[in-house]
Image (cartoon, rainbow, N blue to C red; front, side):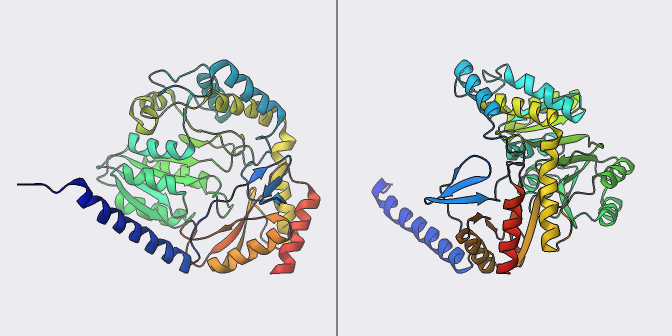
Length: 384
């Protein structure tokens, strides 16, 4: 049997791939759902520049304004000079430089836990945590509005995965009542602050429910750390270093036994290069500032509540305020109109949010001034 030469396959396969991609892009364009990258240069304070235009950004998760803080930048620079630009390998091989255990100790102390484990990103953390703890004989219940990475980790675990309506503790209890029996282990996945709606998760009620049904609760605190700091902690507290701490990376805080187990079993930790030294040093310094400057930590929520009061919206519960628009086209148009007035407020469209709920997601930072917040509220009021 004679096999055809490579050239016989190359052209048709490439052509079909191109046709597939172009057709999918056409569908996205028709629905106003195509994403495009826009080069954005962040300046001091809340300044940003796109295509040569100076803007005030309300689309950044640097809630405490620490990404450009001179102390944080200096810590990153010093670490890069001392340890190099990259970790050099997985943390279990060569990439566990001294700043990472130091950062883990500080994170654990901040969260009131025995230990912590730093991952390459918050997404990687959630891809690794749930599959390391549960499997095919188990049950995972996930808030309907939980972040994509929580859903991805749940599905990768091969456990039975059930959705409960957003923040509906009664519905969650009904699902546990109906499905907990016969399952060896159970996990509940939720968030302290939901990233697209800005509301807080029903964490105390969920923790009480989890206790009754012997379920383990994982709380994603990516958008709460440094802004919403509750006293009650879940057994599994994860988050990111890339928002309030102005750096990059993810983490889990838990008991020593759980952290030791994930060090061996979380695949997104074991098989990934360690965090760069500069990122770890920046996060360490940012955490020091967060704890030493409570006024900075209180400012984003205060500004968000000032904004909602001026627009007659429900009082903000976090640094994130959604302006619901409806269609993707209308959200894009409102975003463009605000940009023309000097504000960067990016439109959020499906599948990031449910169909019919496209919105502007307004994120407040300690770097914003009251006058900037008031000006944005006036611009939105005039355009809606």
